[in-house]
Image (cartoon, rainbow, N blue to C red):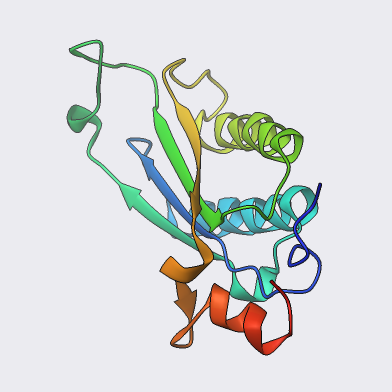
Length: 144
């Protein structure tokens, strides 16, 4: 069952991409646009309030299993409002986001298997934008 808010609230996801793959500004822009589009298509989030932030780490700062990894690695964390997406939507997002990361960060080679996509759900009362929580936005729209 979808939340009453899912189609009407200004859904404002924040995506944090952490990687050890060297990325030029144009590569970050391309991946940022692709992730924003994916978020809109699969999770029904509004592109105009979607944030994608990059944290590019030095290659020698990425360890998997206690060992320095030769392959590019990635951690994508997306924060969304709790209850606004179905489990199937989140699973599809994780699958497609991993594919995007592999395509954009791998540079023609595979990314590390231990690259992760994490969906974090925040209670509507615990976050917002323009100084208004998501819970308050729902109240203003007469939703629960």
